[in-house]
Length: 126
Image (cartoon, rainbow, N blue to C red):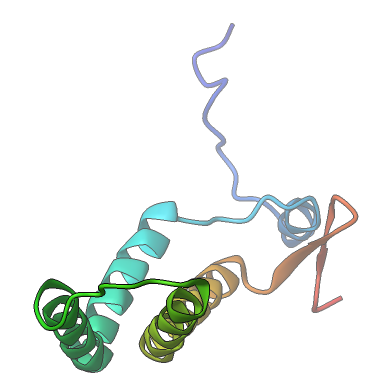
């Protein structure tokens, strides 16, 4: 086997690049996506996490201190769960939604709008 078997001496032609792109061979870095997600999550928690932290502190105080529940029934538990989940959702959904949007944006920008349809890649540019 020749020594140059793994190395290519010529640059790929535009036709070869276009063909490789149609086959789904696009350069994509998982580390870049992870780094952007980490920084986006940190930034979102710094800007939008204050209300979440205040809610969690108040919730812990109300659960660990205050009046004990001497009687319990299904209606009380259901109303408590509903109120807690609605409040958590109010604080968490914007953070998680923006984080999801950041992840999709990074992946779309890396692959230059290359989408897969029926198991075969197709590009939005033609």
